Structure formats: structure tokens, C-alpha cells
Length: 193
Image 1 (cartoon, rainbow, N blue to C red):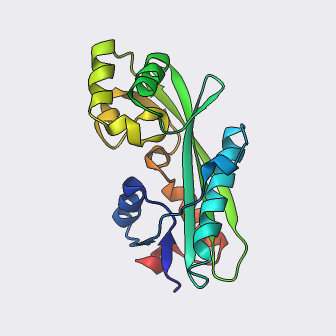
Image 2 (cartoon, rainbow, N blue to C red; image 1 turned 180 degrees about the vertical axis):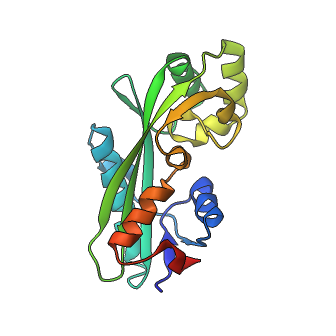
Image 3 (tube, helix red, strand yellow; image 1 turned 120 degrees about the horizontal axis):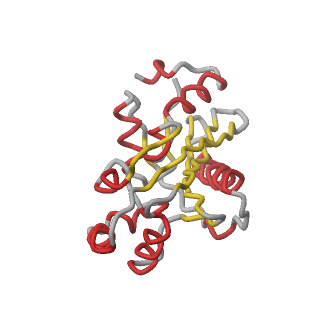
């Protein structure tokens, strides 16, 4: 089996893979995201995931490289990580009591193969929380590290009322989609246990 490489610094993505029995070698991509000017959320995250995986695969030509990227699409805007505290608070004022779509692009590059690029989307229902709660959550620091300014696998999970779609997608990668992509590349997920 080829070495499984995660082209991401995301601790949440790594922990998801480990919980599913995969133990990736982590090699964060240094790809400059500002090089991708797309505004369509699925196209944007798929292109970022592909670019990140392609950057890392150069170091591991015999590896199986997975790149991912997530954004929240809300009211026609793409929300990646917030710029600062004020940006995160403003976003939460917009999102509270509303619904957004979390997109994650997945790019899997097998050894000597062409990249497989897919996107998963999950609908996220935000709780109608008050301003002091928003400020306390932002001051915890957690939202500043996450696409959409929330982490469902952390304190932010308290403020999500419902999900429609894959729940692991909201954490950073869709495990069911990864299983399908591995099968398309000729592998079984259990090959990596």
C-alpha cells in the first residue's frame, strides 16, 4: 500500500482520519490560497484542494495524497477563516438563527494517477444565540481558526441546531466521500487500517 499523506495542517482532519483507522503522514501544503480567484463555492474548494494536493504530491510521488479545503457559503458570500475578532463577531451576528452551506473540496492523488476531485456539501442550521454568547465564543479563540467561524467538534457544536448531510464534512472532510474516492482509485478503506 502507498503511504497515505494528508496535505493539511488541520488537526480536526487528522483526528477524523485517525478515528476511522487511517494514520496519515501529515505534510501541510504551503499553497497560497489567494491564487484562486473563484467565487463559486464548490468550484473554489475543489480547486484549492487540488492545488494543495498537487503541491504536496511533488514531495511524495509514490504516496496517496489527500488535499482538502472548506468554506461556509452564507447569503451569497464565501466565509473562510475570519480575519480577526471583529470579523468573527460580525459573521455570527449574520449567521445566528439562519442557515448556511458548508462545502469541502477533496482531492485525492494516487501514485502515478490523475487527481480525483470532489465536493461535499452539508446544510448547517445555526442557533439564535445572543450577543454576549457570540462574544464569549469568539473570545475562546476557536472561531478564529475555522472556516465559517465555528468548529462543530468543539464549543461551536453547542450553537448548531441541525445538520443536513454528512456531519464529518463539517469537521473538515467527508469520510463517506473519501471511502468512495479511494474505491474509485482502486483501494479499499480497510487497506489502510
